Length: 233
Image (cartoon, rainbow, N blue to C red; front, top):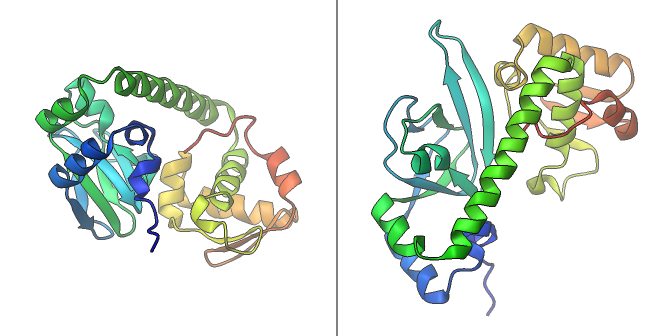
């Protein structure tokens, strides 16, 4: 009998571990289930460890002094979460909130360093990860400053249509998992502007929208309407 590989084995940090290390990881980092809306950690709280998202999605929400919130990133499992605060030994810069049911493993600092700290390949992979994330953050900031809401929306729709968990869906058809408010927070705009942008893209014949259901009618033109880079997520 064959078994599907554990989802976390696709995370670069865990691909190279030995069978013994893997079994130890599973033992010291049990899986916990978070329901939609459950909080993993709060902005400003000290980091207590490293999160491994087995499956599901978690949004990172940053709140300013005026109480305004923005989704700065959405983490789709399998992936790491809370790594910047963990390695910088700084408080969390955002609040982590489950968007859908998420299965999460948690590793405390002493367990992480005891398991991975002496492995140079782990340090190389972490350095590579931070470099990639920095590039995405730079592209995201440039997009917010230089691209129109329509361009940012087109980019977001293309990204949503390419999510791995939608591979079996009819080509170009998907359901938006974010609310209008969440889309506005991701795109750095307002829910009203999100609705107007979707309406404009529909009027141009690029997409069709019914509730949260989206059908990409012309992917090539939608790509031309999108931001010149594709690193918003």
